[in-house]
Amino acid sequence: MKHESQSPKDVDVFASQFAALGSEHRLSVLRTLVRAGPEGLTIGALGERCGITGSTLTHHMKILAAAGLVTQEKQGRSIICAAAEYDVMRALSDYLLSECCADCAEGEGHNHG
Image 1 (cartoon, helix red, strand yellow):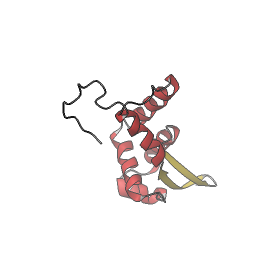
Image 2 (cartoon, helix red, strand yellow; image 1 turned 135 degrees about the vertical axis):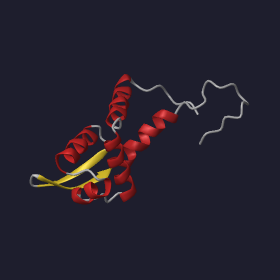
Image 3 (cartoon, one colour; image 1 turned 90 degrees about the vertical axis):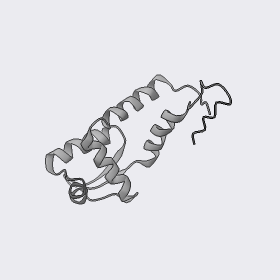
Image 4 (tube, rainbow, N blue to C red; image 1 turned 90 degrees about the horizontal axis):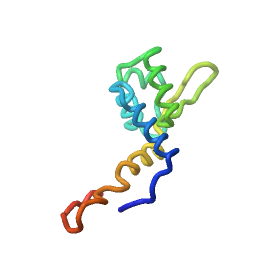
């Protein structure tokens, strides 16, 4: 299932998203938010569930948000809720799989998806 080529801008965006996921802590934060569902979690609950709190969690959330992988709802100066951006993650996954097996010879039995 070969898709049209990605523009250089798209590739830059995907590269920054992968870079944001290049930390064990950020990956843990994102997986925790994915498990929580579309309503997300309060920052306190997120920190408790993934074992990261305070300025460290703030740092990781800032990077994930800049990459578009999470959203944050603010109330005053405090972040009260965070949620995963499922459409963005789906696009990132689709990017990886869009040309799956495109260079395989027909009939080699590769069937992904």
